[in-house]
Image (cartoon, rainbow, N blue to C red; front, side, top):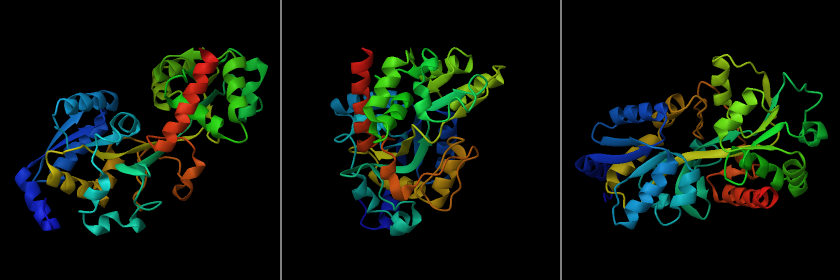
Length: 341
């Protein structure tokens, strides 16, 4: 390992390679290709793969003594659940080798140090995306009938609410966990909703979205706006509203460094670029239409994104991909198992 940044850059060029996993959507592949051009002394060997496939792959490889990956960039939910704590390298030790201006608190909303676990600095969070869970079909339900969560418990909505099965971690589970963790709503609200409203359970986000868009249910918990909007492009007609003051959750995205990374100096050079203005701005512009960054001064992606209050992250009890979020989701899945099985 180089003792100075100049030595690290020289050794990185000698290593010449970095093995990187990114999310399996086109924007990430394009962003990785752009990154490769910005790092002329390093060949980024990029694999586009979903985290739910990448995580078990890494576990199998490491259990057989193979340490093939340097870093991964993408959503951190599966990473936190499957690779913490002993399959990743402590990020603090690596960030300490980078130029100090990149990790200055003043550059980052809420300060630099945001990790999946405040007591275990492995996965670095460069982006929190605010998600919402409750969708209402306004063609069928006017605002006067549903304007707050309490209205969801009205008997006239029995059998008209579809929910992505909350016995498994998913967007519906995270939205319902918000209510479970709330002093105002709590376990009674969630119990009344799931037990008394004869909810229609679905087996996937895609199914929830399709049922909602095509009118099989009038209220949906845990659908995907992009899927609904794609269905609208095919001719499906629906005017919907998201109750975005309730059932909110944060999705954490960022980077993790794998244990025994085969190209440690190249990893540091890549991370230095990733944390730079160019690295974060290109990330926002290219990876997803709703991408954001905690780096101050960089605007959200072309689809825009709701503002996250980084100074009061505790006001978001469900932060997927973090220790706090995992605990909240676990409480929700446990309750759902009790109520629905």
